Image (cartoon, rainbow over the protein chains, first blue to last red):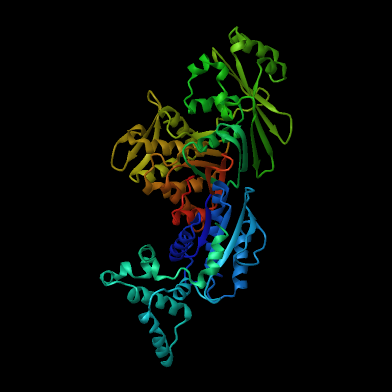
Length: 228
Length: 364
C-alpha cells in the first residue's frame, strides 16, 4: 500500500523521489503543489496547500492511503511558525489532532470516516533554507566555480549591493551544475543537461554529484522512515 | 434541493452515502462505477412509483419478452448482487428538512391485496388480468415514507402476460415522469415537438433557440409543425426550413436536454453522459446555459461524464467570477479495503487543482 508525500515544487518532487528510491520505500511523491518560490506562504500558498490536502482526501478514502507526508521549505521561518502554518491548513480539511512537532504522526480523519496519519518535515540546513540550501550542503564534487561565488558576493557587498541567502544558494547550485559537474560533452547542451530547469535529467544521470550519506540528510531520512 | 442521498442494496451499491449536492452536480468514474445507477436511484427517490421502474427497464433496454418468459426474475436486476431478499433503501436529505425514505421490496401477491392499497373492485380486475398460474408471478412494491409517516405504496406485478402497474393507488399523483436523458436513446421527433410546444406555451421556447445557437450560431428560428407527424423545423440564416432530424445528434440531444429542463415538474434533471454529441469548443457555453437555467428555474441538475474536456469546461464555468450557480463534482470509485463504491465530493477549486496537476479524477 502506497503512502503519499506532498511536496512544494517540481524539483522537490524529483529530489524526494530519488531519496525514496535510495531508502527503498513504497511512497508515492505526489504532484507538487507548486507553491511559488518567492511568494509568501501566508497568502496564496495557504490556499494551495489546502487544495493539495483536499485533493488527498479522496485518495485516503478510495486507495486506503494510511500515511500522508508534507514537505515544505522552512525558508526563514522558525519551525514553530511553520508548524502553525501547516496545522492551520490541516484543521481546515481534516478532523485532526494538533501538529506540535515535525517527524511525528498525528491522527487525521476524513468526512467519510476514514482514518489516516499525517506528519510533516521542513526542508532546511542549519534551521534555514530550502532545497538548494540542502543541495549545497550535500555536494559531493569539487566545486571551485560555485565556491568562488563567495568572492563575488563579497565584491557586490563592497559595492553596496546585496543578495539574499535564498538567491545566493540557488545561484550556487546552478553554477555547481553548470560548471563544476557538467562534462565537456554535456556543455554543448548545458541548458538541458546541467541546469535546475532540467533537474530531472540531473537526478537521473548524475545522482553521484550529491553525497547521499551526508549527515545533513539524516533528519529527512528519519522523516521518510516513518513511511517505510 | 437534495443535499444528500444514501442508497442500500440497489444495483451495484451495497451501501453508499453521498453528501454535499449543489445546484449542478457532475458525476464521474470508471465504467461500472455506478454513475448511471446513481441517476436511477435519484429517479426512484424523486418519483417512487411503479411507472418509474418501468421507465428504468426501458432505459436499460430490458426486454418485455424476457419479463414474460421469466417473471420470477423480473426485478432481480434492481437488487445488489441480485439478492432480492434484501430491501432496497434510498434515503435523501433535502434542504426543506423533509425526510424522504424510499423502500423497494419483493412481496407476495397475496400481501398486496390484503393491504388497504387496492380496493376490492380494482383488485378483482387486476387478479382477472393475471394468468391462472399465480406461481409464476412476482411482485415488487415501492414504499415512500415521509417524515416517518404512513407509507405510500405502489406495486408492479410481473407475470407471463407482462407487467401490471398498480401505481400509487393511495396517492393523487399525476406529475410527469422524472426528466432523465439517457446516454444513447434518441428521443422521437414527435415527443420532442410536443415538449417544444409545451415550452412555448410557458414562454420558454427561446431557451431552445439559444441552446441551438451554441452549436450552430447561424440558426435563426425554431418552429413546430403538425403536418402528418409533429416535427420541429430549424431555419439557418438565408436558408429554407429543415427538419431537426437533419441536423445531427448534438442538436437533438441539446433540444432534449433543454426542453426537459424547462418542462421539468420535479425540479430535477438527470443527464447520462452529458458530453455525448457536443463538440469540445461548445461545452463551456453549454454549461453556462445549464448553470443559468438551473438557477432561473430552481432546478437541480445531476449529470454524468467520462470526458476530461467536459470536466474542465464544468470547472472553468463553475469558477467564473460572479457565477451564481453552486456546483460540485463527485467521483465514484471502488474503495480498495471494502470493495464498495464510494462517492468523493470535490469542490470546484479542488477539482481544478486536480485537473491542473493532471491527477486522475475519474476513478483511476
